[in-house]
Image 1: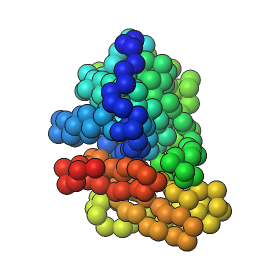
Image 2: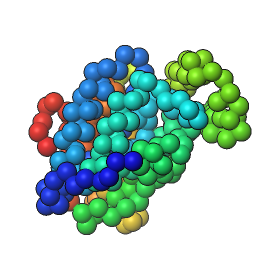
Image 3: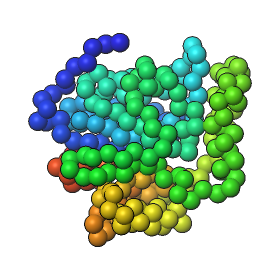
Length: 255
């Protein structure tokens, strides 16, 4: 592994970035990857931390000696962030049933298979993908099957070219993605209600969800809710600086 480098001064590197739902590997994602690389370059100079709120990849399975070529650029950017001193965290989403040791041990990402509760810039922040707030029975069954370590080990015995194609097909079948990401759905409303309930407990004053692909920021008494939206649809992301959360779109603002 390459040695850690500082990237820039501690005073400048005071921002915390949030991104989710890039679904890399879904269709022709060359533009999405290039724009993510641009965002990563900005983060290397400004970010203290990056929190990925799930579904960065559309389908991830780790083979012992194989890495998907179409993921190489994204993995390189994530490793470069770690080497620049950015702390990278990943809260698993509904497409992240097989996150493994490679991301943790080789790339250097801190993986959480649940929600993340952390104090950032004087705020109590709750970060979660949001897929488990409203979970239909069929998806609960799918989660258990896809997350089973024995079944994953058997799956890895399939040639990667075949396994990746099968995974892409299953991912498409199990998608809960909104067809119209700019129109609020029932999931959007459920996430709002869950965020408001979390704020009311007093344990979190900033709740960050993803999953709905609908970016929004709502203030409640005692706190606020931010849904990061979707990198796959709108290049949405969020930045926390000086305790204030900003919801942004890459290319439409300079953060």
